[in-house]
Amino acid sequence: MRTKKNSVTIKSESELARMRKAGKILAKVHEQLGKELRPGMSTYEIDRIGEEMIRSFGCTPSFKNYNGYPASVCVSIDEEVVHGIPSKEKFIREGDIVSLDIGVVYKGYHSDAARTHAVGEISKEASLLIERTRQCFFEGMRYAKAGHCLHEISGAIGAYAERFGYGVVRDLCGHGIGRKLHEEPEIPNYKKLLPGIRLRPGMTLAVEPMINAGKAAVCWLDDEWTVVTKDMSLSAHYENTIVITEGMPEILTLTDSEMAKNRQHD
Ligand code: MF3
Ligand code: CO
Image 1 (cartoon, rainbow, N blue to C red):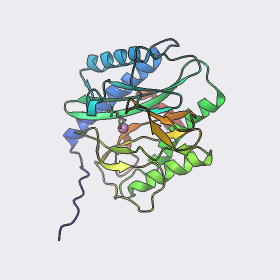
Image 2: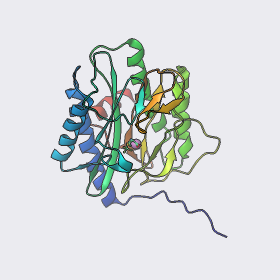
Image 3: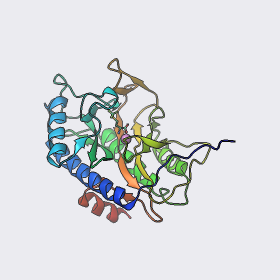
């Protein structure tokens, strides 16, 4: 009899060291690129600046040419959930919410993170969606510990979003990460019937709630990449790369000031 191989990898200390570096650099890229956003800028320009930053830190962009994706930064505006393709003809405007999803490779190891930004003044509805999507991630982190099961993270994310009547995207998931951008396991953002794998120290995961202000349903545009909400409601995305430990997870893709902000919330 053949037993199913559990191919979720445990990273060694030297692998983790590279992932930490990849994470810190990505946190910086997000921080700096977020500050560059201005009404009237094209999404192409955002990608150009982003790629330049990634390379200036000695990394390469994870997404460029991944399964044919043509850019380094996914730029998704308003009802676009993820994987928006940068374009010279697409401009961000005052009042938009803009999700930037970026991956970088450092010495063969990936980190992956996403943030949703406000362009100028945005509606109360939009800023609540952004803040609560971020909080979904941290609700999940309460279970991201050795001994817990993977889908406890999923359930906590989904339950928090549903409190506000939001739609939790079901057609896309988080994922293991390391030598490859996408490794096992798949990490849903909603409650599952089965508990999922048991978490062990050294597992590295990209946890990424994608939350819609309206219904959960999404569809793909003709470019075969851009995912949009079916009901055209706003959508937000928040993602970090983490390491499972015996205690609280190590979040690799936060800046020092984001880490300090977290401690205040504890
Ligand atoms: N964070 C996204 C993901 O994990 C980014 C992938 S974009 C792609 O799926 F272009 F690389 F596919
Ligand atoms: Co990801």
